[in-house]
Structure formats: C-alpha cells, structure tokens
Image (tube, rainbow, N blue to C red; front, side, top):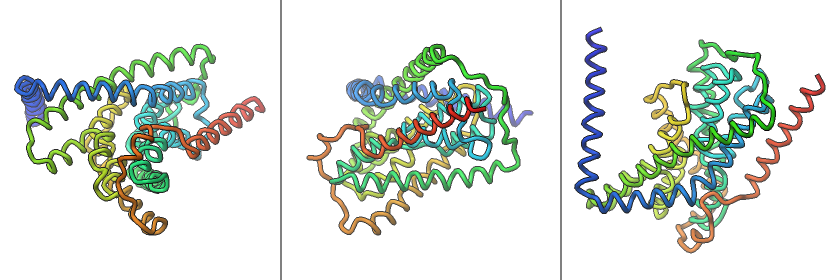
Length: 340
C-alpha cells in the first residue's frame, strides 16, 4: 500500500514539474510558441478537420447502425481494421471504443484494435508521401507494408490476450434509427475533433519552442519528428524512405494522445501501446525496405516540386476502391439481416 501511494505521489509530482517546465518555456520563448501554435492551428483547419471529421462521423454512423458487425464471430475486428486502413488515425481507435461501449466488442477485442489499428490513410501515403518521392508507387509500398505490419501485430496481440474473454459484453445490441444515429455520430465526431484539434495546436506550439531552444538542426529534426507525423514526413523528406515509413508506422506522440482522447472509458496500458507503436514503425520500415528492393529499382529522391501538387490526404484510386469494398460489405450485411 505504501509503495503504491509513493508511486502515485511520484507520478503526480513528475506531472506537475513537467507542466511547470512547459509553462516556463512558453514564457521564455513566446514567439516560438506563438508561431508553432499558429502552424498547428493551420494544420488543424486545413488538414485534420477536412480529412478526419468526415471519416470519424462515418465510422460512428456505421457503428451505431450496426453495420460493423459483418465480420461476425470469426472476424469481429475486420470492420475496425478496414475503417482504420481507409480513414487513417485515429478513426480505428474511435470505432473500436464506440463498439466496446455499445457491446459489439469485448474489452479484449477493443484493446487489440486500439493497440494494433493505428494507420495512416491511403491518401496521405499515396498522395503526400508518394508525391514527395516522385510517384504513388513509393506510397503504395509503404501503405502495403503498414497493412502487413498491422496484421502481424494483431496476430501477436491476440496471442498476448489469448486467455482473456473474447465474446462481446452485450450481444443484444440494438441498432439506432438512421436519423438518430446520424445526429449522435456527428455530435460525437465534433466533440472528438475539438480534443484532436487542441492537441495539434498544443504540440505545434511545443514544436515551435523546440525550434527556439535546440540549435542543432539534426537533433531538432528527429526530436520534432517524434511528436507529429505530418511534420515528421516533411522534415524527413530528404532522408531515406525508410525513415518516413517508420514515422508513418509510429504515428507520433500527438497521434497517440489523439487516440487516448477518443477512447472514453476504455482503459489501455499506455506503455504497451507505445512499445507496439515502435514495433509497428520498425516493421513498416523493414517491410518498406524489402518492397523497395523488390519493386523499385532506383530509389526515389525527395522532390519538393511534387509536394505542392499533392494534398495531405488527397483521394486515390486505392482509397476509392477500399471505400467501395466496405460499402459492398455493408450492403451484403444488411441483405443478410433482412433475409433472416
């Protein structure tokens, strides 16, 4: 008991010191803080809200209508995986938390989804990352490597939780009427976007402070890259492609906090989550390296001319095909339900 109380007090003291340190840095470097926050706000309004909000609302709508049950008992996590691979982070984690709250997933299943289904969207990898390196082929290789790493980590995490309950907590889930589901899904997505946008602005401000504090460009580049994935890809664009692949798999600390904000009452082991993110980054980088060796004879080089032509989360043929596949699965699920 004493050890537990001491650990709790130590954690509280550490958090208080960290908060005080951040406050002091904001006071000492106001210009860097302001510029970073402005950049974070611009990122939120121009990238995060247009790209994430529709997918988050659509994912919430699919969950509330019961459309994410087409995986059945054998593949209950398949719908969440597809939503994550299509929508990007943190859509998968939000869908898993919503399905857990509504009783469509057990706690162990929801935790597996949160630990493993942290993915960059196809538009980001094919449009932006592929544009930096001269073509969608590089983005497609990284996207495929990321999908394979997700599958491998899911298998490993299932083995880790093999002794825990795997059935849904409340199998009597009742889908909501379309109008009610649409309103609730939009409201929930808007609330989540406020948290996500606030985190983007906060981490942007912290990145601006780091630009003022750390004089060494290389150290600053890799430190800032660990915080936010969009900034990471921009800063690492002149590095080997595997560095960008790791950044996409890792996600960045800002994305991690966005996922934590979307979980609600679902509790996870944050240290295990962070370790899995590192493993996913390494797996994505390794598999991307293999894919580049097999399918790209000449390593693509960074091209700033192409970046301006590619939106951060622009559409692609792959993302459209994936969305069509999910829509077909949803329609088949509805037909099967009516057939019964």
